[in-house]
Image (cartoon, rainbow, N blue to C red; front, top):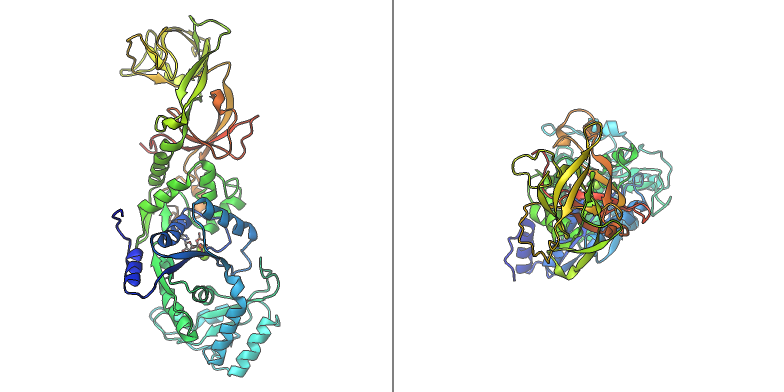
Length: 547
Ligand code: ATP
Ligand code: MG
Ligand code: MG
């Protein structure tokens, strides 16, 4: 078995299994269905599902759907789709809302035990008595209600007799507790709202703290992994489980993953969608799993990225360059090579007959010979990139220039004879001759050329739309900037151009990935049709950002 450095959570689990505390582990991935999953969630998915691939046990998918207002079944579907695409499968599909009856019964148990009370205070009044980290809070005037009165009021809350925000159910712990979250935390609030699964059955909803740990316990989750900001909640998590005397799940925290030049908060991503800064949650500029998929990122490259960043105890900012490195690594192995000219210049091969098409061949992927070769038509008129010709070449310019020779990828060596300029002095045409017997693979000329250019036959070129993406934000760390985060959106995050593609790109399927020679990796977009092919640039070939 391959030696692997265990992260701190894996070390805990390994010790728990060795000591016999558990025979198998149960983890869960608990998204709130209030948005699409993003790259931060990908890291949590890889961690939770990865643990039960390494160790015996299984992972549940649990929708943390206790807030009726922001949740929607559209999000549920997208989340399931994204997890599967990432290559993971859950054991059980569960919903915290399925436990509403059970949670209500837990609340009654607390009231009976004198550990919970109905508070008639407004949220402002509750906040006013909460105290500060250095000063104790004060007891609510409703704190010492009798069990009978609390039971009656809680039932009235449930029956919809009170308006939103007029009452809460609170745990009776200690208003002087050093952990502010232990100062009589709210367990239930009134919300007359339709829930995406329970409809109008409930008008009281459990708070995160009263739902999450109890759901973990109901499912006998052994290791409940969440992000660092929940560390202060652990004490309450343990207290609630202990008082209810239910299965003791345990919470562990790891640092959130933040990526530079973007935002990873569903609330902010939702704003970008709602305000039309991007075209939907799956816009290829979004750091969502669906956006990255549409852009051409592979699941393997995202898993590799999550693996490389690992699991940390401290928050830090991860360079998007690492994600791009991972996708280049993967696509280099998988993507078929194609030629596309993005800024065309006509080249006439003067010694090649008019009206003739000769088939040339080139490998689909030199990294994987099993992908074979493809046909590329060669004709008298071809297109190359404007930047691949210079009237007066700079030193070490190995591309085309008067008198110079280059190889056309998969085809012949050509030599430049002359060129044509229009009245504005712009070069409109280059004239070359091709060298016989210099065809790729059968070159018997003995001529050595330094430069190889990509090209397409002018007659066979397929116009395609190409969407070039750049960073969505123009600052590295959006969260520390002053003012509205939307002020830092990169106005040039999308540029649309027309490219001229070799015929093999005329008919491709959404999600197919290609390396456009010398240009980068591109994926067929979901908008693509055979009438109008559309490609997204996934990533350039080399990191040319800020260099
Ligand atoms: P957001 O702030 O984007 O809404 P969230 O934490 O509220 O994120 P949830 O749906 O509650 O979103 O998250 C599901 C799981 O994914 C949680 O366990 C959460 O800790 C984890 N998670 C969310 N964002 C990140 C992140 N940036 N890095 C690592 N894990 C994350
Ligand atoms: Mg959340
Ligand atoms: Mg959140």
